[in-house]
Amino acid sequence: MSDILLVRMEGPIAVLTMNRPEKRNAMSDALIREIDAFFAKPPAEAKVAVITGEGGHFCAGLDLSEHVERDAEQAIHHSRWWHRIMDGIQFGGLPVVSALSGAVIGGGLELATATHVRVAEPSTIFQLPEGRRGIFVGGGASVRVGRILGADRMTEMMLTGRKYGASEGVSLGLAHYAVGEGEAFAKSMELAKTIASNAPLSNYMMIQALSKIEDMGRSDGLFTESLCVALAQTSPDAIEGLRAFLQKRDPDFR
Image 1 (cartoon, rainbow, N blue to C red):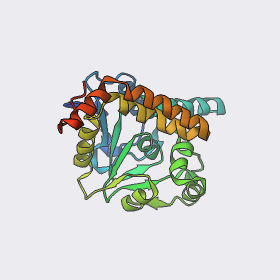
Image 2: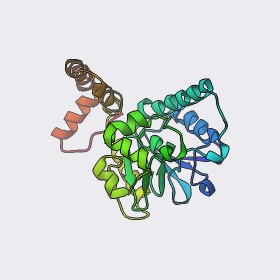
Image 3: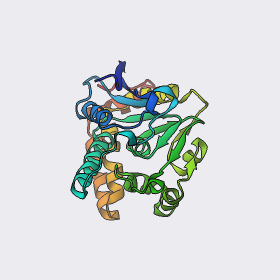
Image 4: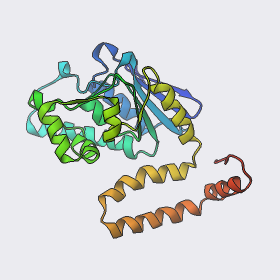
């Protein structure tokens, strides 16, 4: 990794820090390439990732100072590139917790909503300002943010450039936890340790299946659930989990 994405291991937790504080960690193509490279091949010992931003901001969206004019064909390929990378975060198999503060704007919100657990400090600002800039979301917000907020509220958010804070974000589902100032990273690490102690297969099932079941019809979703439970409950981890419960001890998942 380069100096724009700092990566370190804390036990089974990979900590990724976006390191462009002078830009409020705005997303350049170089930064998103580094994020893509990590999630394409995370360290074998990593069971969870925590992603955060240096300097009091998570990510202020696209770095408009690096904006280049693209024709329609180039623009669609660039958008689809973002989609692939965000899908790699959401469906790569590694649970991801995001520690949010300051700007979570545009592409930063697209990145955050590709993570599985989101913790927000009081300084957090959620915003989709594309409408005020004459552009449109292109990194997956119309699906990920749209499914959280609903099309009606997202439309209003984009039309007006409306900002939501941490507590509003939790009530809307943009974040799962609201914590005190300076507490997002510690809470994220606490949650990551809990997630890392789960059975790896059940973590994988939760990441892969639940959002896909949301795309399915009722009968297809229920059948997929049955397949997941059959795989999970017949695994060695399920045997260990039941044994640990009966013996009143913590499970030791291998």
